[in-house]
Length: 361
Image (cartoon, rainbow, N blue to C red; front, side, top):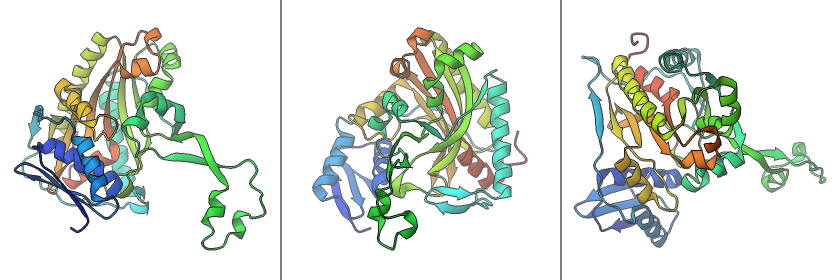
């Protein structure tokens, strides 16, 4: 691979190297991060200078130290399973977005039903349907822009008065500047995380349903630049369990949900492991945040082997006091929150890859 290269000459563990690769791939697409005896060799396509790439790598790895992952379970899957590209009748309509055919739609409906029956109904959680849009201010309060500045998909509107002598129908090739002048940012963005709907409306939800545990199913949008593919989507559906309450109650339900996930994926008979994980942060202190997640065991992912890698299909996340403070939830008796999410498209893809849909629980 040709491009811009930077060699970081300090020891880096495999987990941090992979997080670095994922973070850089958001911006530059085809990225290689090769671990060396001492350090990593990073190559990205043309774009940044060597100095700029070095600054990004050093920022991401500043203060790095090796933190061992915690594996809760490893499941080999049903005997005799083999993995292959699934029957996929989706048609790409944009980067990371697909038109679903009847076979894929039926498979998705089956997976969604499993999640609802196993989690929303079993846990007695009211089932909410999340909207595609959410107020921009919600993401600001949640700190999403600081943690994931590259992932937000904005919503624009036509300006109130755009009749400046050129209408859209009169635009000729290469007149994109005129077209852009018709639009202005709106106060809403496309939803990147469904649980934010629950936190932003917690007072009304708790008053209406008298509970701090909710299930929500809805569309999610994440702009990942060059990083989109058949499983890393710009538009997908997510099912989540969201818990708000005292620190003790949330800690108890975090463990309860983690046990339920362990049982659920074992019964699906798909090969997987559940392991502590961290997000590919690229904010103010990515190393500190990553290590805090791993040390506190505040994030676990369900990973299914596909090809020469793994596909994360679900996660369980403890947030501590972050969202309680960000959304003013303490007056509601909430000191902590946690959530557990299942990527419905990804789980569907994984089950189809192993030929398990129609024969699983």
